Length: 333
Image 1 (cartoon, rainbow, N blue to C red):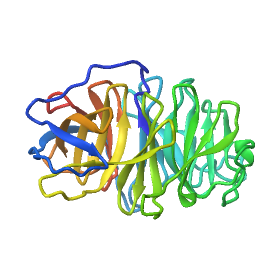
Image 2 (cartoon, helix red, strand yellow):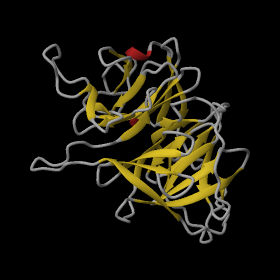
Image 3 (spheres, rainbow, N blue to C red):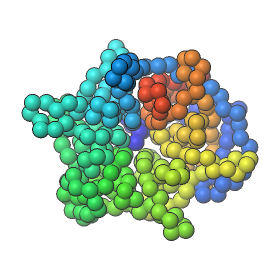
């Protein structure tokens, strides 16, 4: 999923003192809930719907080394970029060229950018992860294209995946893949060898289907699962712990991990955006709660988020299919 791709350095966190909550890992301890503040966002890129429907879909978003908004567009089977002048163009994929028998992507979902600037994209329909070195150069980095589970201990390009939905890259270049139908997180070393990091399993023995992955600065992973949406932290020792937000009612609302930098974590709790400090021990403190609001005053749901700077985030609207930008420190972008 998404992390601070522009600088790979620490930032000073921002915590509005009037909007402080507590998150408990695996405890569900009731806590007083604050009233969300409005997070006012400007529209960076809007769909121009015509007779054929929307012109693009934003599934996952990242910021490339040049500071451009980069996102997966499964509607057009591509990775697209928004140039500094607001122009939208295809960076990789799209319709097949004369030199291709088929498009580069079938259904691109998660995107991550590694320390060297390589784009990694999970193609769920092809059961592969594609590495994009440049607009002219791309390669398969994981997945033989055959759905299934096989290949641990060997080269990632010969392994079987089953509907990979997301990717993340550690600071050392290690690639993590959400192998969703196999209920696993797979790891691809810098030498190209694949292995299983974890199988998502609750204490009751029931399995959880993973959907998203983030790498924290300490090397641990945050996994968002489906049905229900919750966050599982996988420690560097392989331990697993559920992350939950406390509430006065003790209710467990859907929780999705969206973005991380060296100081902060962005989550989605139901429709709200939650900004928190990084996990430390059993309790995560210093949390700000926001309602994302568009220029017309309408609430929207963020499908994915990326840090543009330590204070500014880019958001994909889950329903309207548009891209917005907002400042975490003071209402407007």
